[in-house]
Length: 209
Ligand SMILES: O=P(O)(O)OP(=O)(O)OP(=O)(O)OC[C@H]1O[C@@H](n2cnc3c(O)ncnc32)[C@H](O)[C@@H]1O
Ligand SMILES: [Mg+2]
Image (cartoon, rainbow, N blue to C red):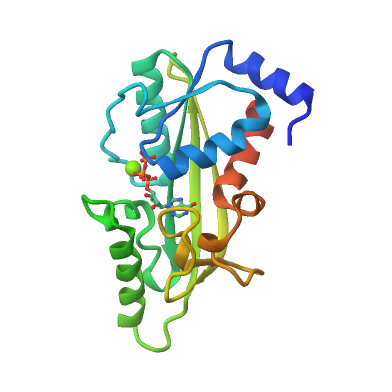
């Protein structure tokens, strides 16, 4: 939680205008809004500004977060915060990784994407482990082209069948280490206590605010 000093610092650093949340994923926009809430920063989403969804041509989470943030800052003239994240399954050599959104296909069906993850693990045979982690890269870009990026991580296990209807994306098949419920079953505040996104956000706050 921020104290008044943190809030003042954040507002001074970002200026009096709004911060663009440069994501078209409503689940992410909600979580980033919840993480930013204690800082009293006014935000606007990329969708609300009608910003286009850039092609994610980067080969790393950081590169994709930076390109999304820089495009939004450039087009809006406002500071912009972007998130590139994904699920990395150890038995699948890190897949779906930066392709996590693309595994859900054009209709963004995460029922299909979760089933694909599970079927691919099963195809590796009975010895395949279920270890996985989520990565989140957050990039904060200013209209002058300056950008700073941070990467967070949370480790856990892939479970089947999917459990819970909270959260978004792959949350129902990811159970963080040390817990007996999936992210899909978890209270949002509890997820923010341990998630890859909260980890990256804490680093951003420490470095930027
Ligand atoms: O690029 P933007 O517009 O931000 O939205 P996106 O959904 O395309 O986002 P990414 O390109 O970063 O793809 C990451 C995918 O990984 C999944 N993902 C990321 N963080 C997650 C989380 O906390 N819980 C569950 N799934 C997550 C989610 O399904 C995302 O669609
Ligand atoms: Mg994307």
